[in-house]
Image (cartoon, rainbow, N blue to C red; front, side, top):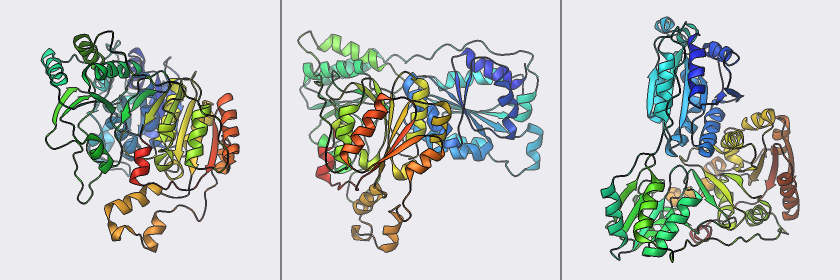
Length: 530
């Protein structure tokens, strides 16, 4: 075997079965090895940010890493935003980054860069393999380091890739398991839950499963604690028959109000909540200053085991979880806006669908509207770097080909990684994209007002920086140009009919939903919380 072949075989041996690729010259021996080693699916992406976002969506659904294949430092730079999102969501990812041959680096060729310096801030583990005889071992270490929720980045110099590796591949790396939580920490939580103080149990991280929700709900019934999720967990199970759990509001002012009076905060899979941004005269920490906070279980610890132990100690058969009753509304009529889009989604969403939410402001109404829809998984943007939704839908569809994927996508954020549509068409993925087209960066209009810049009222130059009309983008034409069938909806009836047809069909489809900007205020967002 050469180095590339031994690396791919090592990855396959350890269950890494998909590689999202955007290769260049330095990676040609890795590309060639894909035909020599069985078991690795190769998915071409036309932009590196699509590859990393797809790997994140894949990991969210299967709980194990995919690989990316990226071209040198600039390629990793293009992928960086969605690597950041994966790391913030505690999603496992292995990045294979090609580099110049070791002997060529001294010449400082045009694409030479400090790849480790670029990758380090968004990776939990970084390694440059220096010898073909070591690359399989380094690949196995990358799998081990990625574990269940970390980003591992491995640099593959060209001569390491083409060089001989007489030792061959490394055997399978043992699957990563969540770390046990110490008994004393569980005992501390039990004491806090039984001392009578107002308490919130906050779930988050990689996957708030149906089982976790039900166990937490039982604890709430037994102890009086409120059960919440962080604002944007990477994945959460919801809909009819799942536990009724609140979501912490996005706006800092609303989140502070929601947590007011909380004296104890128990964290499972998430960190203590903070404001997404700093605002004048608004606290950065969202829980009350005197709140006693316990990091009960981190993202890589055994959250299920902690909940099981506490339920056994504190709950009995009379403490049943509070479950949402299935409620499917009728199809909407009239004007098409964020509200009627949300109603149609709740009406037509099929059971066990996967919703990828990068709807930004226009998607805010969809989350509460689907709280009691047919049961489904909801994937959230965890790191705030937009351009995640379309690629994540690609990864989710490859991870779960038997399930319908519905991507809620804002028009502005879609343009960051619109190349993902081409990959959907090439792979014939069962993804329906609802393109929420209000021709504005509405979220930035809101943030402009909240920061108090220029008294909250943009001037003409600022206003032009927050609008993306003139020219208006034709997303139907864009999608069809990349091989995805598409339609335009301007009424609630048309949108509902198109969505119903897309849910009943298969393959990639885009609906350009022409809607007005959401008139969002603090009360409006409060009403839009689950």
